[in-house]
Image 1 (spheres, rainbow, N blue to C red):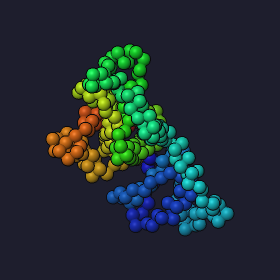
Image 2 (image 1 turned 45 degrees about the vertical axis):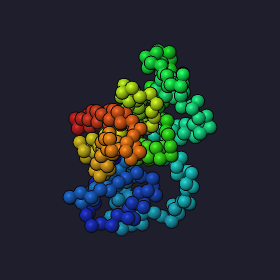
Image 3 (image 1 turned 120 degrees about the horizontal axis):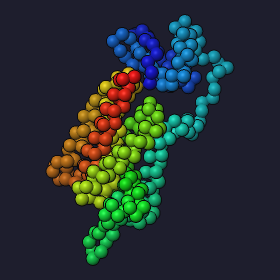
Image 4 (image 1 turned 180 degrees about the vertical axis):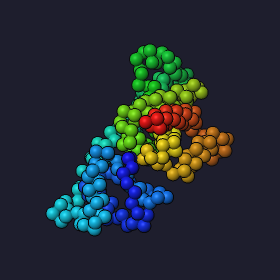
Length: 283
């Protein structure tokens, strides 16, 4: 998001917002001490946005009747949205596909995606070493556990936050940054969990905490960057992470939580948020 201009504090901007969305101009209006600050998502639409605002200030019609298109189909709308955030959409799509296939293939799919190959011998769980697994060419296992989910609530909770945070990062910093965060946070979180001696784990939670840390630091250190996360959401998610690390969590049914993956992902996100925010502040 890029700041464009200040509007009067008490101005009714409903018609202006409607016109801007009509012309497909991504924007946001925030309340500031000096007035209402108007932002534009794409700086290439700066002049087009100003032209609409000038007509609004003069009280002229913002949308001519002959320009009013038919309401686009919802499928067309979602197609446009998904094209803007391909990595975020891919993360969600792959997670949903694997979750659906696991219902058909069962453990065969799960053991193909765990961080190391696992099996049963003599009634006990056996598994290979990570070094042998990677050197043997099964490099995908470093990331694949992030796409495993063990229940609807696990899946929905993670993908909801991937969509919320991922869209911000991809729209404001690009798909390359989002892809890099996925790889580094996903692999980092998985390795953090693996070194504790756990091999049967999965979920996008580590990546979610990385996205949270990244967006939170960007919003705090570069207030005009367009990033936003409610402080109460930050408190809730950090509180939840701490709660699942306590003995109380296991007594109420939350014992099998990948705590180290959460912490590892959060550290990756804080590091990336600090780096990118520092670069933005220097610019």
